[in-house]
Length: 223
Image (cartoon, rainbow, N blue to C red; front, top):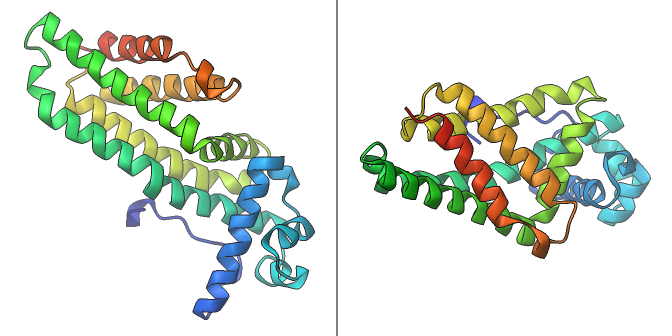
């Protein structure tokens, strides 16, 4: 994550490389439990068993279970930004740089561009559903946990602000009106598509419907 979007860990800091490896293994184990059992499944004993470490190791780094959950969300956010979000926006950005002059050229050309852009975004969503489903489930779990735990909200705000800033920039590049509003509406649509897609097998994901929803949002803001 960039410096302005960095999130600080709350648990005890590791002083040696080996110690840091154990600490990270504990957080990765906690993240697997979030995916399989939800945030409420994260308990010291369960995490220690999943990480194959003594119970004393988890309580040494995380005396408070809230700190363990918060740092698990922090690890998720860092991994998501580097492994999922940034690659998607990079590919979309490269696509737009190649085709941005087509916006406003003619109604037919603009329509083709929006169709291609929508298909590109939906293609990444389908890839996530197939190969990074755990990431999507963890995101949903933490999103809901923020409603319960106010201490998670600053981490969530930083994470989702970064997503939103990138989406607003995408809208600005293609020349939509009110890119800030357009970005929020488009991101909300994508969140809805993701949530509904997670409730069915990946082969039942309706790509055509998702593409039409995203394309319609983009087209509505073009001058």
